[in-house]
Length: 60
Ligand SMILES: [Zn+2]
Image 1 (cartoon, rainbow, N blue to C red):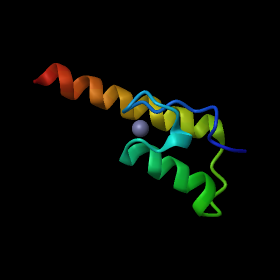
Image 2: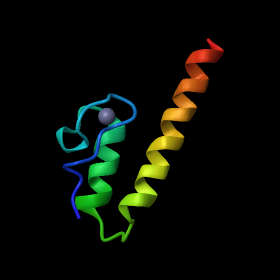
Image 3: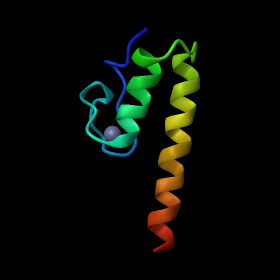
Image 4: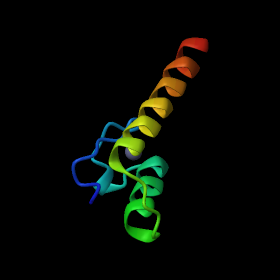
């Protein structure tokens, strides 16, 4: 599994390009460590992150 097909919730760019810290963290999880994190689990994490970002924007 690779992160090529993933889109970052924070910068809306391909995670593989590592444009922001969220991308780099995600990419590191895929390529850097030996964590067996499933892609579906990652999608849930990214969705939660985008939801938090949305709430933060609305709050301001
Ligand atoms: Zn990003």
